[in-house]
Amino acid sequence: MDNKEFIKALKNIVEEKNISEDVIFDALEVALTTAYKKNFDSKTNVRVDINRETGDIKVYSYLVVVDDVDFGSEEIDEEGNVVKIPPEINIDAQIIHEQAVEMVPGIKVGETIEKEVTPKDFGRVAAGIAKQVVMQKIREAEKESIMAEFADKKDEMMLGLVALEDSKNYYIDLGRTRGILPKSEIIPGETIKMGSNIRVYITKVESNTKGPLILLSRKHYGFVKRLFESEIPELMDGTIMLYAVVREAGIRSKVAVYSTNEKIDAVGSCIGERGSRIASILKELNGEKVDLVLYSEDPAEFIKNALSPAKDVIVNITDPVKKEALAIVNKDNLSLAIGKKGTNVKLANRLTKYKIEVKTLEQINEEGNQE
Image (cartoon, rainbow, N blue to C red):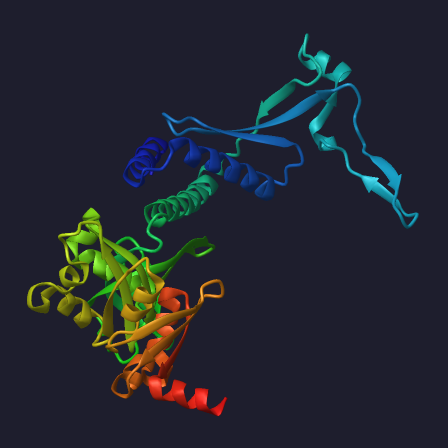
């Protein structure tokens, strides 16, 4: 490939990958300067110039005109040792002003004297380096482009393709890159099939040495939140507001909603006609139970709703400052209010931000008699 073909190919890559031409050429010039010093044992200052139209490469060595050659200095460190401080400019790349004037009349201190030193076979060295530099810059540009694309995707839900699997993770194809779905972040009990489309929630987006790192989850409470937003149009237009979501993945979620329009039933809208809307959500959650809770500004009413599926609950706010409450239920609803291994009341605690104690009237009477 001659120089003109190289420039044409380079510009095609620049346009295709949307990379700055200046970035490529600047990086090439720096890389070629380093290569020249390494291959031709140059101690002088070197500058490489690439003609951006013809592709011709020229190497110039140059001397900086100084008043006097700086050989560095010495100083004593804290332990009393003499330490050599090197000069700011390479001694071999300096020329005293008196000598410089003999070579270039009228030259001033701080200016440079240049000489072309392009080796005959430097084109071969340049071709190999150019390929490395271009590939590196393409990788960097693609990495930056992907990061820009996914920078605002954290806490969002995406549809991806299950592409790979190892002992700890699934790798989900998200288009231009792959996200990592740890097996610890899938819904307990669900089966992930290779090649299938899957919804995932993005929990982390960051850049590392290997490229963008995108961590995914189906276990996060935000996954349920985004599912509802995707299935319930009223949540997107603001007719229904989602107050909070709490979740014990694979077991139960509680979703608190309320309506900004008195004529709209928030819970009913989320369920849909004949359960059509909630059915698609439950299917995605692999059978995980979902309690739709009507939010209320009245803490007692909100706690009562949050203890669903328990019914006939009476709530007393025992300490509004410490946010403590007593929920009284009958025997038939005690196990429903508490839930298996206490899951239901724990989720209600998190949803309402109240510490809820659940008791039957009989238990309260017994405690009163004991006192």
